[in-house]
Every structure is written in structure tokens, then in C-alpha cells.
Image (cartoon, rainbow, N blue to C red; front, side, top):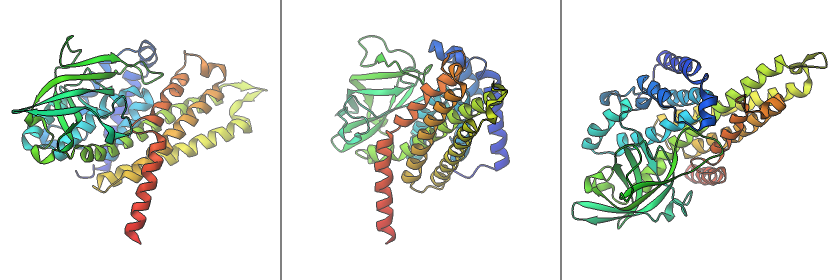
Length: 388
């Protein structure tokens, strides 16, 4: 994937920002409080080509680089963070197929994914194996020219609306990635693949997060990502894809932090106490200075990780750093925005309280920040050993 022309990137990101201002901001509060899936907005995102953002042009995508994708994610998240969740696992699944799929898998799946007709999901976590990915229990047993999948998966974003699920399951060779195709929407009762329950969440509302049960679900042997040569290599492939997921989380955090900071800045110049706007009080100025500094640092870390990933280099350390710092900063910035707003920041009529409810997802999503510190440290130690 080549670097996107900067002018083209700016035009695309500008288009997304105008879309957010026109189509998202007027309805986000109501949709989020109702926990309603934003059907019209998602259709608009598909019309803009966002589902094909990183899919190569030869398969009908936009072929954008990862930095531009991160900027799009930030723009969407500044309007409503849940929108970035609609495309995150989709883009991760598309990346797995682009990099590791067979020619048949790429030619058959990617064109439909680029238009948004076929939505992607990623199914890795389990009830007893979240960040402990090597403890996966979901199994896939060969039976003739099929595999029979049995197990339960947790925290599946887009679990119902997706039509292709990149699933990690244990085979005799080790953990393998399967491309499970299904009909979008709720599966019938007694089906071998069913979204057994919806998971209610503090924030990140409007997009479904479900538990999925595979009860002897049959898939063709051709569903193995990349074919038989990749049997037992699924964990390696998926964990590499998680680097992109962590860049997405960092960009989301930048978006939420941007919205919180801008809301605080605007309010601080409107709210008058003791005869002057509160922005003139040193206590508030210190808060704004710290918020802006953390936001800028978060963006630079996210850019560094995106550019390294784009070059095809291992970005586990950089993606982990970006995700760790940006998510913690978003949590702090959203809290400071609420404090600057006072009682209005706690009221549901303004979006500030939503920023504060959405921010914790980035702290725990795509591997908790405690896990990120382990990933970063191990990566640093590995690089030190290689260089000395």
C-alpha cells in the first residue's frame, strides 16, 4: 500500500468532517441515548467509501494509507465514537484477507466489503480468554471437506450485522483463523451460529456488542484464511492485525479528546463568573493547557504508529504506546471537560457526559492498558537485544 497523496488525504478527511457536522452531530445525542443503530449514518458512510478505506483499489476500495484511515477514524469519533466501531473490525477483517487470504478469498470477498454490502467482524475474545489469547477454547474439528466449530465468543462488535467473521479457533495444528460467512441479522433460534445475548454497555452505544455461540457450526475447509498453509498460524496473523486495531483505538481516543477539549474551550469563553469568562481564570487556563498538550502528544504518537505500520514494519511498541497514552489522555480530558462545564457537564442534554462514558472503552479495548504496558516492555527488551 502506497502513501496517500497528502492533498487527496486532506480532501477525503475534510469530506468526512463535513459529513459529521451535517449528518452526525445533529442526531448523535438522541441516537446514543436511545441506543439506536445509526442506519442512515452508516449508509452515508458506505456512500463515502469509508468501508473500503484501506482496501486496495483493484478490489474496489479507496486504497488509503493507514495514517489517512486514522485521521478518518478521529473525525468520526469526534462526532460519535460508536461510528468508528462500525468500521474498525470491518477494516481489520479486510486487512487480514488482503494480506493473507487466497486469491479466491480476496476476489470474492473484498469487492463486497469495499462497498459495505458485506460487513466484517473479528471474533477472538472468549469468556475465559480475553487478553489471554493463548487460552482459547473454541474448537474446529475437521469432518471431510468441512470443519465443525464449537465454542463461545465474547465482545463481538457488529456480531449481528456482519456477514463475514474472522474467527480464531483451535485446530489440531494450533489456533487457526477461519472466515465464517453468515447472513447478516439475528440468527434463527436453534441455529448452529447464534448471537446468544446483547451486552449492555456504559458507553459505546448504538453499535451492537454480542456474545456468539457456535454449536457444531459447519464451514467449508476453504474457509481457512489463506488456505491449508495457514492452519495453526491464525494467532500470529490476528495479533499482527491487532496492531491496526490499536491504532484505531488511539485515533478514536484522539477524536473523543478533541470533542471534549473543543467543548470545554468554547464553554470556558461563554461562562462568566466573578465578572469575567472562566477562561480568564488561571485554574481553568491550566486545565486547558494540559488538555491541549495531551491531545497533541496523542496525535503525534498515533501518527508515528500509523506511519510505521504503513511501512510494513512491526509496530507493536508504537501502536501500544499510542493506544496507552491516547486512551488515558482521553479519559482525563473528558473528565476535565466535565469539570469545566460544572453541572451542565453532568447533564444529559449536552454531549460532555457521553464523552466521559465513551472514553473508558479505549482504556480496555483491543487489550487493556495493563496488557499494553507488557507489550511495550517486551517489545523494547526485544529491540534492545537485537541492537546490542
